[in-house]
Amino acid sequence: MKLVIVTAVEEYQKDVLTLFKNANIEKFSSSDIDGHKSDSTILMASNWFSSGKGGSQSSMFFSFTEDENIDTLFDLIKEFNKSIETNNPLKAAVVPIEKSI
Image 1 (tube, rainbow, N blue to C red):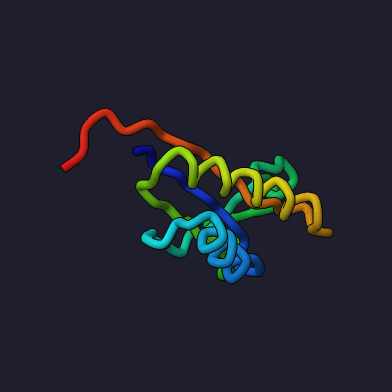
Image 2 (cartoon, rainbow, N blue to C red):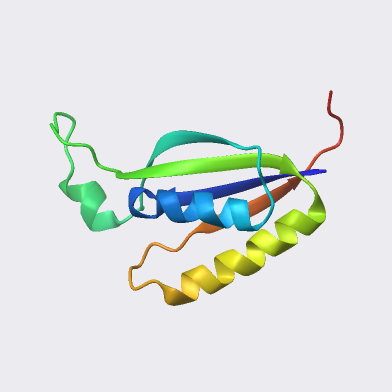
């Protein structure tokens, strides 16, 4: 069993749910997050009293699942990322689990 983590901009949240379903990952959690890019022009232009958010509305999805489901999910994400026209591909990472209860 491993932990798979996927991040996506708000625009792709429904797509991630479909990818999880197609990879037979039926149990997962999600959380709303703000995504940021470290761009020196953005950092220099920002100020302490900015009224707007600096990040992009994003989501993080995570699940404890089996290797074969993760392999399928990664294949599906690779294909999905090839089909998008934005500069915000889905990102995924896998973390091995040493102990669990």
